[in-house]
Each structure stands twice: as C-alpha cells, then as structure tokens.
Length: 339
Image 1 (cartoon, rainbow, N blue to C red):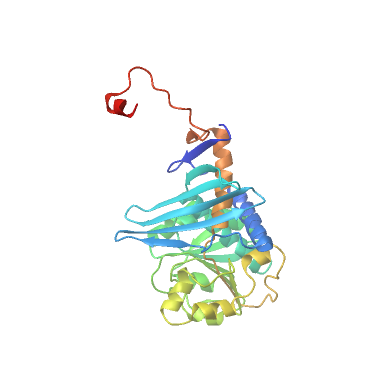
Image 2: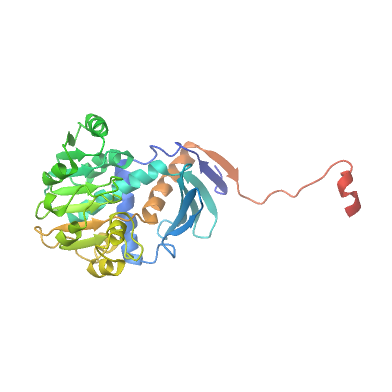
C-alpha cells in the first residue's frame, strides 16, 4: 500500500487487530502524553447534532509523539454507527475505520489503566457490573494491569448474560456470578460499573471501605456514592459537560457540573504522566469517572491502521493527484457550444 493510499476498514475488519496488551500499553502512553502536553483534545471535546431520528457526536484528538490526529464519528439511533477518521499531523487523510470493536476494547483498557493507577497494590477481587461487549474485554486487560487479581464477581440485569460471561472466562481470572450488583460490589475491592441501567444498582452502602470504583455506566451508581468517595478522579480535566453517572446525578439534582469540578482531584492524565499522585491513602474510598476521551480511540485506531496496512486489509484508494482528464473522439454534442 502506498503512503498516499486512503484505507477503509469496514464492519468487522478491525476486530481482533489490537491485542489486550497492546491496548493497555497504547492507552497508558496516550494518557501519559495527554497529562504531559495537555490541549490534545478537540474544542469542544464533543460536538453534538440531533435529528428527529438520530443523534450524532464527534470527538477529536491529536497525539504529536505518534504523528497522528483524528476524529471519532458516532451516530446513535436505529442505524447506529461508530467510525474513526485518521490523519497525519499535516492533515493528510489516512484511514476511515469502523470502530465499534475498538471502542469497546479502548473503554475496557481505560478502566484497567484507572484501576492500575488508583487501586491499592495486591488486591485480589473485583466486581464487574455489566456483561456486554465492553465487559468481554475486561478479564484480559485487568489481568495485565493487576497481576494479583484472581476473582471477578459478575452481575448484570440478565442472568443468562452473566452465565455466558462466566462460562467464557474461567482461564486466568475466574469469573463467578453474583446474585445482584450490590452483592458483587460487597465482595470486591475494585468495582467497575459499565451497565446501561437507567436507575442505580449500586449504592454507597454496598461498597467496602477503601474500595476503588471505576464508573463507566449510564446511571448505575446511586448519588450517595459521590458522598462516599474521599478521592474523585476523572479521565480528563474538563467536567463541564459530563456524561454517564455524573450526568445522571446532575439531572437528579444531587450535584452540579461546577461542584464536580471543584471536588475532582488530579485527572488520570496527570497521574499517568507522574505529575500528580494517585491514591495516597490505601484506606481511602476512591471514585473514578471515566467519560471516554478520543485520545484512547486514536491510540487504538493507529495500531489497527498500521496492522491493516501490513496485512493488506480493507479497501485502498490512491490519494495522489488525479490524472488530467483527456477526451478522445468527437466532442460530446452537449459540449459543442462551449468550444
């Protein structure tokens, strides 16, 4: 593939191109660079557009050390899509990648990175609230991030989804079903929520003292978890337009964006870059709000793009200058008047 070729990876073609180890390393490096350099996200961080039938969102990022930039392009509706548009630092378009699988892996890897930076050393148990696409990537990245981890307590709304998840993850980390999200949380030192529940399923009373909670769900944590937390961390420095649990708490009147920003300590990027401490007190209650930043999507899209080029996957289109058009034969009748 020529350097000027534009690559399109269609649905499923990027699946499996990035390993769990590569994802964790790439996400850690992206957040380190973000913490050291700052100003690597688009302004605004998320651009939204709604139609009567769908909602569109765009998130951009640049990683100067990698020489790449790009935008995640999402549509939410009956025809939901998730793509990543990749370019070099001079603006040359490089690829358009269908990124649903990559996004799930990125989200899991970011949760694992947050756990590595914030959880006390030597923890052995974690709770996973949710058993869908993102959760399927968690055992691999958590095993790499937390080598002492032995058990995952899994809970979700559908018992059959929990059973399937646990049956698929018995090598390495042992996944065991819990009767409820609250029971799973009570048994764990680390709690990762990533469900699409529209009402809280875990409250402060369900959490152990000194636990670490990584919140990626929509509205699965009760507002009193915010009061339980003695240390609040976000994955980025801007909490002015939060999503997920934070947005649900604001909608319920339990807090405000300004109050969240005031309470938040150093963000994940500063901690990853070594410019701020992570957990200072092993006994502290720690809550991390993972909003989902485009730097993680960019880091994984870059790996998928490089591997796809080497394996000659996808559709390729030359991006050099088009050859000058040359007409042969008689001038078309419709153009004769232009001579």
